[in-house]
Image (cartoon, rainbow, N blue to C red; front, side):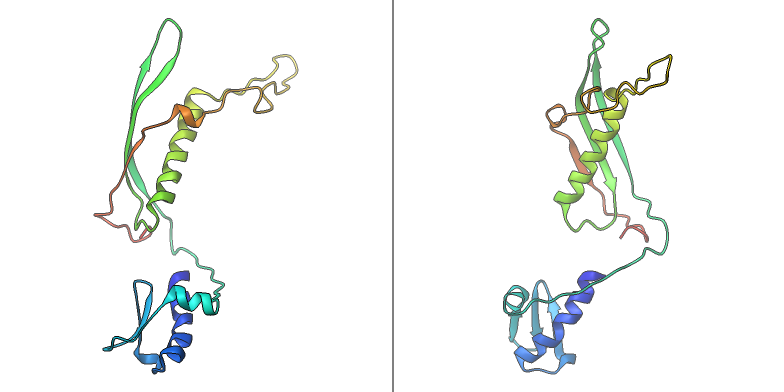
Length: 165
């Protein structure tokens, strides 16, 4: 919605610069143009000359329900209790993906957080007083980035959900 509002606000200065009626201004792939002509102005050029600023707030009509399937292959050494993540793969239906790099980092982060809860984080209390003994990051293991390389993440956008697209 914010992008649509920004484009809408950018139409007026584009019409002025292109010397065309507002109704004839089209926006496509970063450019404003006059319908049916080769008159074009790049949005980046427009922003360099004068900033386009929009303050926008939106609300979702209902719950968002992204979904996916995550599969983790682990090896466990019964002698030492060590657990090693061999492979981790997931397919995720998260709606329309505008920035794959950002969405991938969100999914990676959530997976690491879940693995961390399962394998690393341990809350310990002193049995007599109930005092928290693992009260800081120095007192218990946290998942580290070097333990989680090579995640295979895929996005599935074939069936868009009304509340996530």
